[in-house]
Length: 417
Image (tube, rainbow, N blue to C red):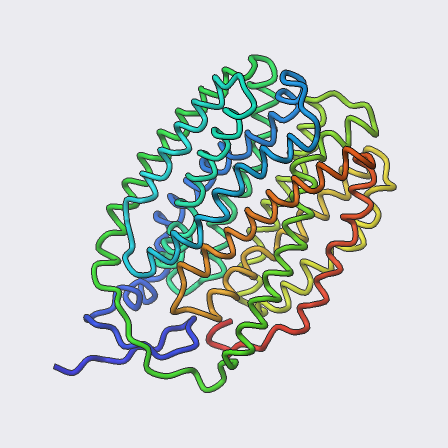
């Protein structure tokens, strides 16, 4: 029996499916599966809300256990380290054999991590709890990104932005919930958020039920490259450039997420709760920018969005260390909106460079984002201990200049943009 040849919209190759009809082709013809996209985005919201609690309770932990900035950075590193190392491993494994219910199982690690964090009385136990939450993230991100793409109906940037939107808003909610719940009621109140993890487990199990038939027969054989596709060498250079761009973006975002509260308290003598609300303003702008970046990349090309989002934030980051309290709040809105618009475009660009290694690439880039954030937080904490928190922001202000490396990104075939 002859097997039809399907040209993938996003891929740089022609693929022959082992079965007919191809689930991906059916999904693209039907358009986006909005219920699935909403479910995976909401799950991302719940996942990142719980994760963001760790950074939001740093002032409480610092005061309760007399921690220095370097120890605060190590908590972030413990959380990000497990996520960074394991995400590419999870992505590589699921490229070969997708696991539809792994998302619900991985969320169980976050569930137990939160419970442990709520009762931790010693610094090593806090590190273990943070690592367990990171483990849940390592399982969640690669497969959930794949589900978002399967449900995209061919609108890959849009689907990635919807997925990122949930995570970004979840991250922004952490400081608010910490200010309203954890600060008044203390560290034990973190256990209440385990109910959020349970809700996420239920939703992800239902998504797994939808996902299972989509992957029942998704084995493809490589036939030929798109004639306009970049060479293997150009692909490797482009991936290295994308990692560098993600480095500049994520390290700057990490500097704000981990230490902006301390910066505002130190420079403007605001209360902890007020500083957490200012952090929420930045993270909310981050979420909005993450949503708009994907559709703009679908329409105008991801390379142009990457150029704008990294370099466009530079004037505002350079001005931030010299602004007053109100000016800092306004500048962080512009910084968060502009710099976060790169996230979806960077990830989808990388996926389109190597569509046959989708899970691994997704895991690498999500993992790099987590790893850079964790390692950067630890290094910046050490610098802050020796030079002051203000100096950290003067140095980090130049990070978006790395966006100039976008000139080395190749032009992808029109069908892959």
